[in-house]
Image (cartoon, rainbow, N blue to C red):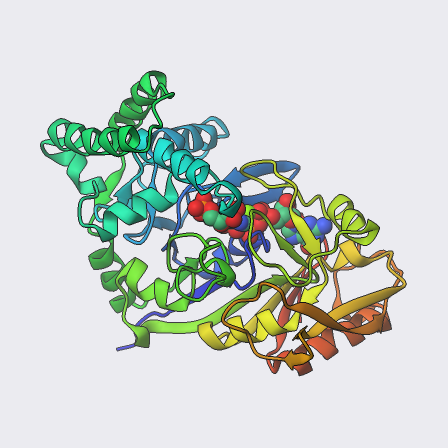
Length: 422
Ligand code: GDP
Ligand code: IMO
Ligand code: MG
């Protein structure tokens, strides 16, 4: 019997690569779209028919009415933010109730987790991670400490469990002398969110997904964040708190390694990072400002400036290796349209030493560049590879050769339509 496959679409840099756009674009080919990691720290933008949506917890397959969307066990979910996000989709005419399934094993982000996120960041001072403030780290910490609250807890004896965990958080906050906060409004809205969640299928999604695979259905696993923000393989401690890499698909959905099919690695034609942490390719000059302005590189969740730089092959090679990427997806080539030359980081250098493999700590390493000619052509209206200017074709070929992986999709604009299959 032919069983289905789980293909993964993974951000392979520091997040915001354009995952939302490509998951939405790929959805017609799949039966199920599932998030396996992260929570409302994600902001996935989808633009079509003159409409724009930014999804945080809900999978980007939600706009295709016939498809099942799953929030898997590896995710964390904030009921109040989830409610706001779902209502926005419902107001836009999308009926979610029978199409959105939430794992009972996913962990709940409490209002006090968000306060703890702020308190821990404040205590770190200069070494702060620059988190999204959504309570991600404290929630995954409680999961690992085996004291977290899960979606399934909503179904039985919830109030008591909630009060116990909240009291524990309040004690930690007192110990940290972080007492100037008021969650009363937040808490009311959060509880309303918990009630709202009950209308959805809160289920054993790992059983569901495996049943669907046995029926020959195909699943697209939608990554959140990026490989360099992975708790194990990212630039620790300046990372998020979940497994954003391919291994996270198996643990975050409850699917076996053998079910994994294609692994799509998505990246931009240049680099960005939001939050703190080492970033060898970062540009502090006018070029960086130009990329930010043209690329509209401001956080979808926090509105913060994204740090910008040239593409980083050291980081990309590492991420391709860790994830077993089989195909690449390159986004935002159009943002580089005006540059006469394009730089590519091929190695890092520190104290006379040069490396082309990812160091343990990338802090203090500077980027070594090669220069390629720019295409100085407007790419945004192109819909066929044969119309690409020669210098853009050469850029793609150069990257494919360096990364030893084919670039199968090229995106030249934010709209669903501006996507070219090669
Ligand atoms: P995600 O978190 O990986 O889903 O990415 P984000 O939505 O946070 O950030 C990607 C941004 O780039 C969004 O504003 C998209 O609308 C936009 N975008 C996606 N693809 C392209 C592209 O090819 N060209 C341009 N100019 N913008 C794009
Ligand atoms: P998407 O899915 C970009 C960054 C934060 C911070 C670090 C830890 O839209 O690509 P957290 O709140 O997770 O504890 O923050 O990770 N970060 C992201 N950066 N895109 C994201 O998601 C991110 N999610 C978290 O800026 O540096
Ligand atoms: Mg994003």
